[in-house]
Image (cartoon, rainbow, N blue to C red; front, top):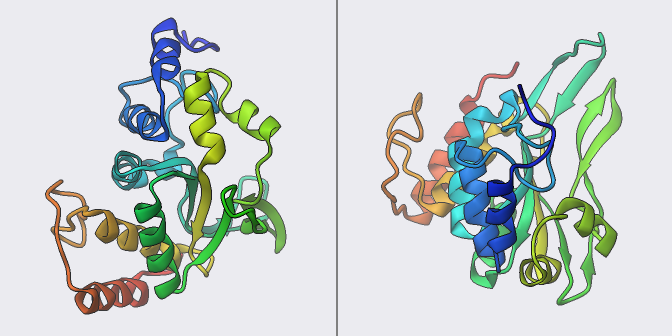
Length: 232
């Protein structure tokens, strides 16, 4: 029977974290199924089925220093309610490593992704990105400004040191500019940026070995992925 509370072992693991990097490692373990729960999500539930193909990318992002707390694939179609739903591929999370932050930010802008930032250090407070619509009306947003109450709700179990690191981190959202599966090229960009190896088109995460590409080569592959992705 599924429990509706976090186990003591999982609670101890999250409580032991001191930094955003520590939280990222634990989030990677939750994505991989080693931990059953993370503080801001329904206890003892894993990633949503629609995001399972994103898990290798999300795991690598978290271990690289981008603590992800929300993600979704690019999709469009009629929902169970009979309404027309559209999603942008998107990811949001926290980053304290400034070098990684600028790499993510620069790559997202070069490849025409949508970006929104909340940076406590510079008092940058940008608006949410609408990433899901229902019959053409905004339904879900990623990013935006988080206050202390938001962070307490998201991270109720972690200790003082880890909470302080999250509170001082940049809250970064990167989203594809288009709705639907064409925006799935976002994950190709992130894979190359963090060193995830794409061995074959049908198995992009067949190897965990890092790969280094020249910028022009990466750009060519990315544009090819954007142009060849079938629309649903």
